Length: 449
Ligand code: NDP
Ligand code: 2IT
Image (tube, rainbow, N blue to C red; front, side, top):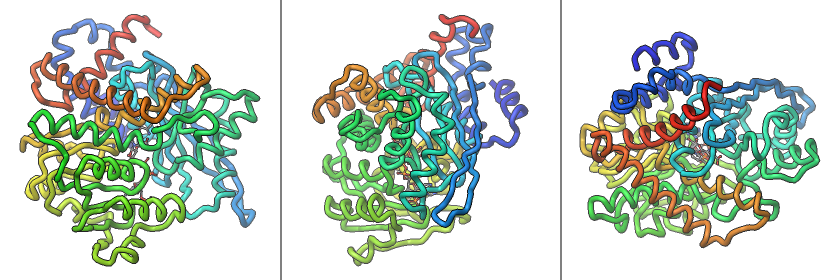
């Protein structure tokens, strides 16, 4: 394992996020490789850490003042072992190849856990839609798709949303894709309901995270009712995480954006959540506005350079990070444990650093790793693909029931895989092992390709 990681690091020394994702994964797989020597002989891990294909492209576009900008576009097609490449697009100024590769790597094993026939990929651009007009975002999406369209398709590679890519961006991307191909197909998910989208897809990631948290709590005979929850982020995942916490009788105390967080001791109720949705989705503003409407809440600006985030210092029962990678470091994790948190359920991808995970595992905290806990989003994307190919759409209740069943299944799969390899109760090991074994056997069956 050390040798494989060393090769990954040596090959791309600057790709720290990718090294972190691979390192965290490999650290849990030793029991599998001991039992399956053919995986080593067939260099399975060496193959899985190298993307099948990486596409990098120039995205030139014009802003409202007539100035020309050039961004960089990415699509990393990591594995097609069990289905067409599938995974979101991220538009954010921090996007680089390391981040897209880490997300694509995670996606492969997450998608495997869903039980649906989905390979793994991820893409995006170092373009920030924040502060841009709708017309600028449209021109950017069209320029991005003018290259991406030749690489994707409903049976090849099916992108969706991620940070900075929501319903508006998927609309512009889909419109350009359809025009260039002259075909109406489900080559993107997260589409609008009137044009091939699935009910519950916007809610799916956040709802799924809370369903997974409820499954973990049930193993200790507990429910979410009355639980005090710290949530980070205020985008798609965080909004529907809070919505489902409320529906399950829990209390959400915090939400955040990249500038700071709000702490609302009375709890963020349904009306307050509607206000957050209006601030973030319609006005595309800053969360700080929340305190203008609800002055009893506290807004705390966060300095990204500080050694810990005060959001994680509030006492609570559960924490559901839903903003971004590495948002909980070792010190934050210790604050969470000291503040009484007994459950972490990851909505964001890789929100906990390796040091944070070590703190959680050392303190008997229920730890739901991202690739299991946030798989509800891509699972409902898979259901959207199924509905598109059947040319029909399921009701809200039907999709939600399927989502619940998939999350219930993932929870079981994680525990079963962990137990089968002597790691009882370890969701991280279970998710990695179960996700890996399925992909690995598909790769072996298909020969050296
Ligand atoms: P959104 O763009 O809807 O929201 C992102 C939220 O996180 C915003 O509140 C944003 O603040 C904040 N944020 C983004 N980058 C940073 C940063 N560098 N530091 C601090 N805060 C930041 O994205 P999503 O809700 O879709 O995604 C959130 C996380 O969930 C990501 O890790 C994503 O990969 C993961 N995820 C998303 C899925 C989906 O279906 N959308 C599925 C599974 C996982 P601001 O408004 O200031 O930018
Ligand atoms: O990280 C993720 O799983 C997503 N951004 C959703 C991907 C998808 O294809 O729905």
